[in-house]
Image 1 (cartoon, rainbow, N blue to C red):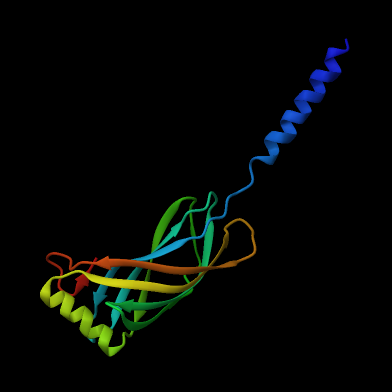
Image 2 (image 1 turned 120 degrees about the vertical axis):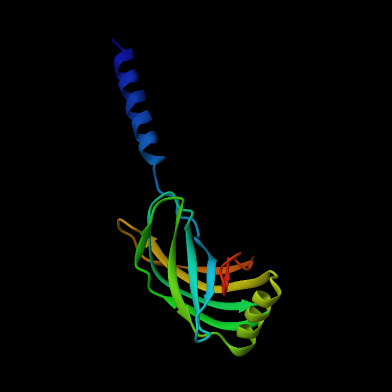
Length: 157
């Protein structure tokens, strides 16, 4: 009879311990340019890929990123996507942008010579757990490159 209270106590302790291990993990998101399309007027349409590395769905409220291409300042990508992205998933947001002259020329040169174009995104993304949660600002500083898309004039991927 003495072993039943000990067994009950052990079971309660195990349940308490198991309930503590289910807290969500919030990880900094990432952003990358999936596609850059040069419009007829020279403006850019940027398809910005937002990555949620958290273990819970996140709501992306705002994006403000300074863009540079081949080390030339291009301008600011600013959007309020207000989208939810599932745990460890990604989604794309389209953002229009008026690039600076030197950046516009760097993109035109990369397209004409069919070469890769490096870019950098610096700034912040505001996101919160989708169910409920206080929005947090996450700082970004990402580098990558784009290549001309075969058969698509004015498109870098």
